[in-house]
Length: 415
Image (cartoon, rainbow, N blue to C red; front, top):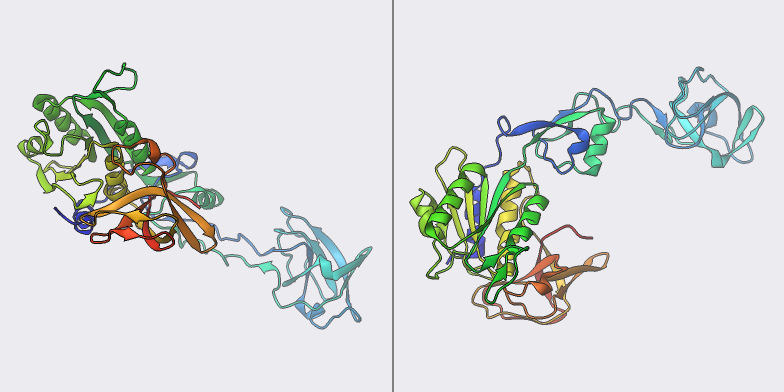
């Protein structure tokens, strides 16, 4: 068996990101959420577009207000009102000021804004009662971004802040990487679909639904191929179709050492090179990873059939692989944090053990891990509900006491 660390290294070395020339498409900005930029973006616009006020107040010349005070205010003539969106008409001369609102364009001649809270107005005169600093409350043109330079880098995922930046830059379309295609099928004569009546000894196929959701959350497109019986011909047909039509293939079940576990021999008969057969982790020991010599070199993951084991191996290995494949420049590695356990955590110490539960931010800088109630069995899907992290007990460690620190794998976004 390979260690978890070695398994991760092998998988991520096998992943080749999508090609920036062949695997891209142009999409409208409103449909670009969650996509990965395939080319750097620049803008013809400066940000801010022009010098503008960061405060409601008065646009003045610094020289006119540098020495004023409440006892000896600077008295200036108001020559113009400048709301946001208005183009100033006057040039501010000595002894003059313009009433200005937040975001409005600075008038020529003015270099400083005095906030209205330190002023007093009488008709067309303003009394400045506190000295200003040079350039105070002025946002200068191109101080945030200079036109023609890189605005957003290639490999960045587009979420709300990035979409806002692109909209402000008047980008109506962007070039993004296509979504990777991930084929999913479950194996086993005991499996039935959701709409079938359950008979003695049968199991409803939940893996395919959970994996499809996780694939979408990872930025890829699931290709659901249903349930495949434990028959060599049917399995060969499913694998053949999957590797021809997907970038990554996920099967669950059929990779252990049972009499009806045919997946590995079928992979080899189709020219697959098996890189991983088992991992020293619990749950998730039976894991098969293979590649094929086809033009697009699909990556095959044979996941365990037990529901929790299938999800744990996905979170630990498949999710980073999909994110790296998708073109992300960074942020695709597994994310670990230290947390204080609220419970006693145990393992046999023989394999790296993953216990599921919730991570909670108990104070601004302290995370706590709460173990899911009930049995931590790889067949117990029920207490997986609400899980947002996995506590990790390394090989050789059998006990973490309540109140002690534990390494936690973050499996989804949370606050």
